[in-house]
Image 1 (cartoon, rainbow, N blue to C red):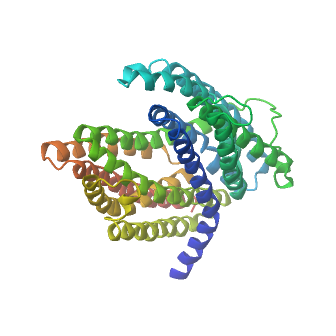
Image 2 (spheres, rainbow, N blue to C red):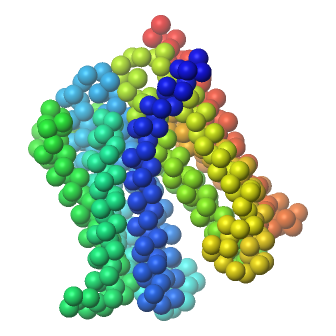
Image 3 (spheres, rainbow, N blue to C red):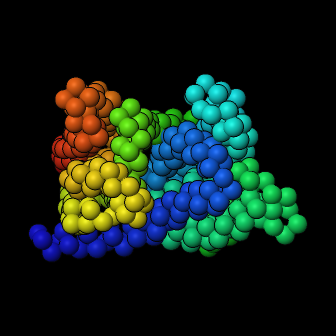
Length: 448
């Protein structure tokens, strides 16, 4: 049994590595923008932070919707239904472009209401223009996501990784020219970063589209834009899977964003310490997202092959692997809790708070890893609606209120809010694991 689980872990990890590198590449895009914009001025950096915080919430929703095609394509491929793979791609293009246009409109409208967020006037002035520019990048980003999720459903995870790496070079070069006014271009400051992001996402979409439509491995799926008709049953299936997936991610990310607001109610030092802790936790989470994506693909493929006996080994080996991996990060966080914050600040009070938060982060590493992989497994068997409800209840009904009570009523401050986050992550981790075990038993009984 142990040998079987080790074999499954190796297969999942091999599939996950390119996804992990691609995820880290996307994170690096944001870090690069902040670093290069920060050299222009603090107002520009503040405006960038304000807009990206709002923009990221919509982007998370869009990514969740686009992910729907991955398990469905994996199932179709597992069942050797290549024609359905092509249909799923073309119909997902319709769905994702439709939502991207809606999101672009929402960003454009929201850009004129930033003044109501009680931010400095000079920051709002810069933020509005920047927000409208990057808003238009949602459409090419969703086009990229559609083709990325399609080929990942076919177990091709490397192409998107290579494009994510190259896109960082494109982004840095674009920022250098447009932010600072190089090679005869005017210095556009923050707006220049917005145009560079738009150009980078256009490059990503065109590069992946060109690769897929010209590569011989995908010819049989007809991955072009030659639409034959609107397939409403497929569209309904994509929306029924994608929208709950999107809101599941949205509820979690928004909960963590709101926890930042609560930190600000305590003190600026607490907020700074919180950002340090979240920064380290985000690095390990990007790695786990790769494991989660690989789990979705492998479980979906097994479903398509009707290889139901493989579901449990694939699923629980992935959960076991994520637990071991995140435990390692947890040990690092505890061992170096007094040193890691020095990478961000020299303020001893902030470092002291951050060190205590890293201890809690060490404990919720395991829960975070299990819940992310568990969600990926459930998505792979197209079980998304109940997990969405569970996520909302865990974070918004239990986690945040409990964190607020501990932080403010019992005066535990920043630690109280993070105890609340730990509780929410642990609850969904337990629920997703039990839910997956229950669902695969149901699936096996239905097909026995």
